[in-house]
Image (tube, rainbow over all chains, first blue to last red; front, side, top):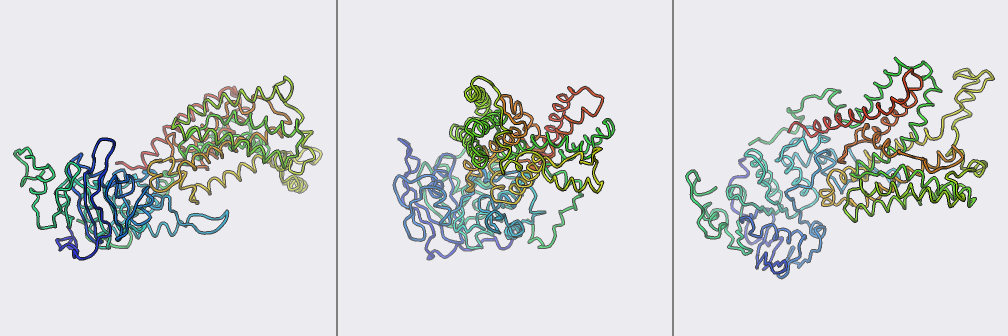
Length: 272
Length: 368
């Protein structure tokens, strides 16, 4: 990793959190997906949400990003209670979510994707048009901040690697004023080099003062960037630990809900 | 891990040759097609084909088809099909002729009314597709028959049993708006050119080409407008996004539903435009007007680089696609070939275009 992303003490805990979720419960009919989850993010930190498949990670972040409304519990944004009814509401206050599909269109250029739905315009009346020169410069600039030098801004997103696409999606969210960035399994489909690129991007975003919620079921990826770790299991939080307070094995065992993970030859240091 | 990369030019960027850059433009295939077809007819056809009157000869059907093809291309880029545009030409032709002849209304009422009417029918198409989530192919196939049938029934009602409604020319002859939708433009210019001997003339000194048919002018205007919208405006970006991936577009705040419904309305209005021009030109309308034009328009759009899956294509491409079409239909009459080769040619062009587009699309996405 780069030097700036090396270990550092998590942002002082006296900073009030930007988003605070208290005792969130979410029921779907007779299924209790979330049974009282509490979670908070401060600016400039990366808070990892870990959990095995079916632990409720997706339901939880969808509650945070306004896709679902909690059955019980409350969401505070900068100390004020919020009731998001659509993802737009969450986006407007500055909670941006980068879902796994990235909301990108492969055949369109990076610039067109970057500003999709929020194109800046010049001129008025019938001559109102996209400010293409500005869109290109801003896209190149925002991508450079993420450590990616685009070849040309009109290159199709389809020609980018998975990691670069992820970076475009993250850069877009940050550019449009995200205070909290929720990343849904950003590394799940990536190779080793791509993964480290994405983790470096997360680090850059954090350094800009954005609070990052990093969802993963990969302990190693989480430990590489996380400041705090919260483990979800069967719709409940099993606890939150700071960086340095917990070992990979402990995290992994918590994710598995205390059940022994099948040990096999080749599992390194007890983590998979 | 890469260090902080230099802010200057990227060392990974090879200078792209002009050819490679052109390869990434969707309209390349159509332009190459125009060049090939031109070469073919330069060799095989009578010299007269490439004189001014010959060019006007093949540009007129090209323009009539092209106006439809540009609408079809926009809709295809937006990710939908409209198979009902041919029937829409007949249906809005009926509406226009009935309003003008049977009701005797002036053009400044009947022309806008025809557009509003067409847009309304287009929006019904769109609403059904969007609301039901059914493929537009099947919904508009239904409308292909519904509108064709309604045109027949309507014509019989309006004329008392005939499937042809005459008298449009008499009803519109003195109308101030008529020159914008029928006949030739720039007549003065051509007479002036003829006086100077710069264009071919008949023995009595009148130019062989009295002016540029208005549909060609409209074709150029609509192609330029559609290209500008696609490449330079927010709406253009939304059209590409809606066709490329409606979910991603919706999640990014693109009003996908309104974009698609509007595109259905635009396509229907293109059909109405063709209906008005051809009905005024012929002085009558009949139920076969626009027959099978939906396929020709889609073929022109595909030759122009539109992908059947949406999200890619160009209006310029459809423009050239329509010109290829016009050149082949009319061009064969200048050659010794049987004119019925036309259909073979058309099918062949379509097949080549689809294969070509597929390859281009893979190239744009890259080797990954």
